[in-house]
Length: 343
Image (cartoon, rainbow, N blue to C red; front, side, top):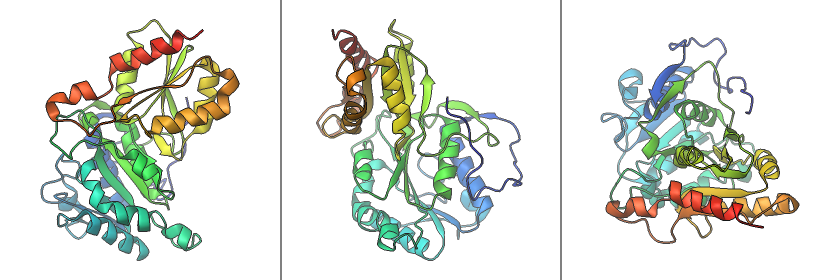
């Protein structure tokens, strides 16, 4: 297990902790608490997006922030995602720390130009002289039976846009700390929040930081097959590990860019087999990149090809077909069986 680190920059060591012990929280509550604590620590930080102030967000993740900090620091915006990100870029240029929300993953498409053409490139254009500390929160992935455009896996869009960091938590504790680290970062971060995990509970300890961005965590040690997974499907991989006699090592990537290649490679070298599990379509999904990296670095240690348990190469289906489309325990264990059957 990766060791914990000190508090991120922007989080004072002597900052009073209103929650002195670890408490059980949902992921939604943990993210809300991270936003609250970050806003308390830095009065340059602003939270804005569609319905984030008066309503507290569709999932109530931003509930109470406007009442606590005022609508000058947590405010509602028009339904214009491109404008939301454009305003965030301008605010960052003026020394602020914007944390905009895109209400649902499928609504990120109108903001694509601003995120790829401007947000991702400002630090490179200025040779590092201009910071771009923007954290774009996006409720992401499926599993909640939502309507069209409300359940998408957009991670590869942002991963292919050099200049954007991309992270996604799987536990409430990780959600709290990954968001704190993201907000404190000088680079723009796309923070993908797994919607189906919003109501999952777990301990959150604000005194014990989780590993930073760029570090993976082994959630379950194993000897036969490495399962590489992130976000909403970490729980699926752990459930699958309980149902098979094959010893699965479950690696929660947490940070997709920067990627913890060292942990991935070390795990695959131990087991000799790897399966990647993600919700997005198979073709050019993040599993393809992982398979290529593993093949380059672990070719002589591999006992079987790197396999992928993914969504299908179709548009995201209607809610009634969602369970058949999303990869689950069965699809993952099919890949595990194939990997183990290799001579």
